[in-house]
Length: 132
Ligand SMILES: Cc1cc2nc3c(=O)[nH]c(=O)nc-3n(C[C@H](O)[C@H](O)[C@H](O)COP(=O)(O)O)c2cc1C
Ligand code: SF4
Image (cartoon, rainbow, N blue to C red; front, top):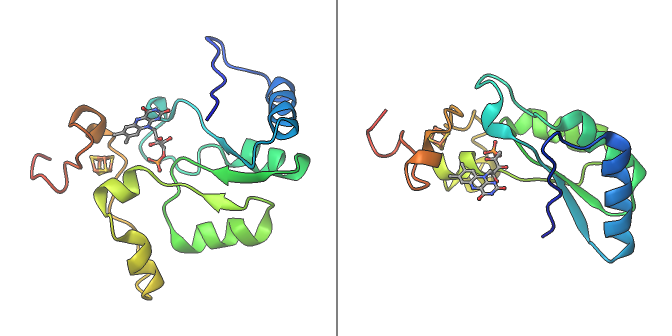
């Protein structure tokens, strides 16, 4: 995994050039991410615009990360864009069996409220440890 860090961030053109170099070097997939902890709790699909755009422009699978939360919305993005995969961190911390549940037909909303307190709780969900 390679991370591109910058104190003031990176322009879209710089990001695209970096992705093209990674693909040329043999990367199978690119996951687009950023400083999720500074975003508002109610926000979701934080990086959709850039991720959908880069997915149209490079020859590698592109993964959408950050605030993926509803089955129907994820499915719609899958159908309407070139994004190939979706990653989830906090939804799995709150509900490790989430994908099995969705696969079994219960497509209701996942439990995570994106409070980000698991980052200060050794990766454990506060919903599941009775601390909230
Ligand atoms: C407990 C926890 C630890 C994390 N640790 C890292 C980390 O070490 N490095 C990193 O780049 N992102 C880290 N993340 C960010 C996740 O990889 C992911 O990008 C972020 O949680 C947004 O996805 P989500 O909305 O599905 O949670 C962490 C997230 C959580 C909740
Ligand atoms: S502590 Fe908050 S952000 Fe972390 S998994 Fe639980 S509900 Fe989600």
